[in-house]
Image 1 (cartoon, one colour):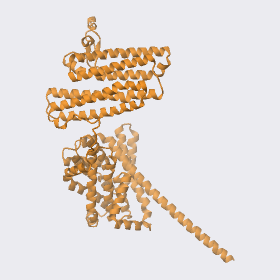
Image 2 (cartoon, rainbow, N blue to C red):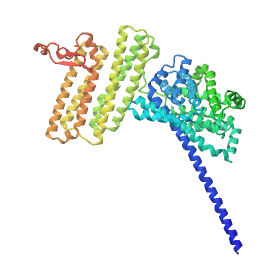
Image 3 (cartoon, helix red, strand yellow):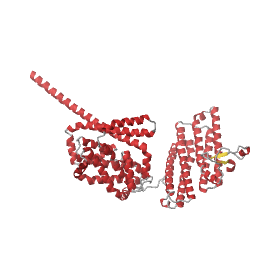
Image 4 (cartoon, one colour):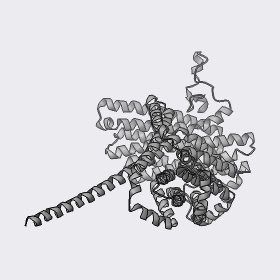
Length: 602
């Protein structure tokens, strides 16, 4: 009996020890995975921080550089290389390029050249980090924090953010290396790695998927480089994974730009095709390529970085002459949608007429009138939103402002192209007038959308009601401004001097009406009317916005009056004699620089 009891206790102790061993193994596996994932998360965040800092510090310069990328294929590739080297992301460069292409500033061929350069530019940071520079991580962190914390200047803070990101990036690589050390002794990992090494296409697809999920090819290649450095992944498999990371990097911008027009999405599609073709061509020959890469530098991390750069350099040299051909192929793969022309799309801006400035200016004038019709609709209907608290109509008017913005941008770009031709003095003046007038119309649309409609939303949300007298004053002033719009369009079309004087006189009456409205509103507040007290801020804001709209409308009259010598250079009275004031009050333009006597205007 004692022997059986001892054997039972021994068996129980053995089971408990095995259970503790398994629990410890599982726990250590979880900790190992957690540490690696934590390092990867820090790596992704660090690359994003560097990209954000660079974009905020130098975003304007990068956009201007990319906007000039259509000069030649080589120039476009150089612009893309520089942008991606700074941003450490070909994806960010792709999104910027697509935004230009959607506005017609970059052709598909030039955009593809930009992307080939960007693909190579994004490898430069991997080249730098393939060297053992982990010792500078504390210095970069210290410098970054000092710049960020010691200055309120946005530029210095953005540069500080870049240094912090670089320091964290190096630190994350150290964390991944340290956390992955136990994987060398894993019994399961060699089986998985051996299977992937036999299925290089599967490995490449897996890397492409992981790159798309992480949205960073730089981070993915650095991770592959780190696993290769610690001996977890063999070189040939690392090269296959790098090819997959490049394919996944091409997939990211294509999916990010699905909402863009087909013409713009052709750029990321063509770039993805280039990457897929390059990867498929090279994948069967990795065993032959490996000795060539090792001949340059036999350090494992350097070999991964060199292969990554060599692949993208080969894509640039091989496919740069083929960007025109790829542009035509993507045009077939992504044809323009055969949908009815939207209201916001320009109808009269004929590109073929640009070489004939007189015809182009006529086309632009028709488009400006169409834009003015949309603004006039917004102006006339906004009062109905206040009257009926109609949420549906409010949303419709807000969408009309998007159409105004689209037309404004298209007209400006069209006229900018027109002014590149040799123009007569009259044509230059007319182009300037058209741009000024469209800008004023766009400002009116913004006032209605971002101010008047917001006031209407507050009124509806809080269920407020204007007093009967206050509402009558607002309606009267709105009617005056709507009539002002009609006179303004008459001046724009005819250039008639008497109509311009009439427009100025109408603005003077409107200013008096606005002043009377403010005084009347103040009297109602003094009398303690509940409706006036509740809607006081709304009432005053509506008066202010209607006056602002009137100023934009009347600005079209001042160039005509100035040309006839009917404007003064200053509002300051140069002659203090009493008779100088007898001719009437002075009317100012929106900038307050010129004036016309009211007696002359009427």
